[in-house]
Amino acid sequence: MSDNEFHRRKKQEESLEKKCFVICDSEREYAFRLSSLLSKKIDYQIHVCSSFKEVQRIADEKKIGILLVEEEIFENQSDAVAEVVILLSERNREGENKVCKYQSFDEILSDILNICMEEQQQGVLKRQICKSCSLIGVYSPISRVGKTTFAIALGKEAAKREPVLYLNLETYSGWEEWSGKSEPYTLADLLYYAKQEKGNLETRIGAMTGYLDELAYIAPMEMSEDLKAVTVNEWMNLLETLRNRKIYKKIIFDFGECVQGLWDMLSMCNEIYMPVREGRISKGKVFQFEKNLRLLGREELLEKIVRIQLGKDISKDVKRILKRKEWRDDRSGTTP
Image 1 (cartoon, rainbow, N blue to C red):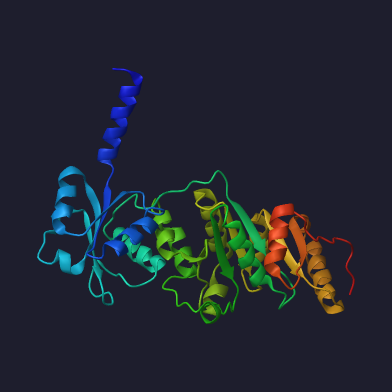
Image 2: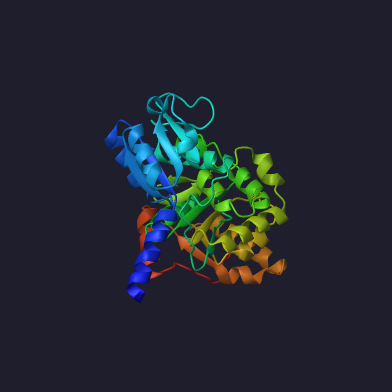
């Protein structure tokens, strides 16, 4: 047998062994749209059909790992056709293994991943392994300087070219109010699973993640006391875990003032962006902040900090920063 024939047959065998994700819905247009979106996230071969006979035909030829099927189509059918059966319901989710079809794709994906974890279905998500993971800190001793707006704009722009995760560590982020989203998972859940999970953290993160355009995020904690209670060791474990897993090329931390071990976390960051503004009071705050770092023996942080004077259009500032690496970094002695 020639080398080409050997590789061709091996590829065929691998294709047959790979599990399938089957979407069965009478609304074919809906099913194809959903399959198009899922194909970017799910590491299974995806098939679309509109009747249970077609599902059985696929099952005769391939191993169905997950069957996402319209509730009415699956009525009185056997669940032995697939390892995991998830019902697509037109109503709100009721009972186990049901997903409401008329919700956002992020919510559908999250529901699917949660069910798969409960059913111990492994290897569902496409695992993107980045060669490296950079931790990016955004912090400023000055309030109302556009820090969060800058951090999100930076993340959105960077996410157009590489996987980026945004995490907000502010005491009062106002997330639900300005985003208009009530999130089922928060940073508290990520901290918990970072301590508990062994090999399935990627799927957990996938289930918890939302998106602002292409920027991935996990919502901040709702209770300020919960954030303040997180220990230095818990934060450091999270940073180490995320960096070692290399799921994202960059992780942006939007730091607030009440994080335990703030200096240690900033030390782990590859870069620290510090939005500043003109004015005697603002300059005085920066001067005191830098003086504190020197007194605490944290001079190494000063080498990582890049000062950014933001204009009215922050998105333009971000694009210029990422494209040209032109940082407005005035490190001259600042006096009040």
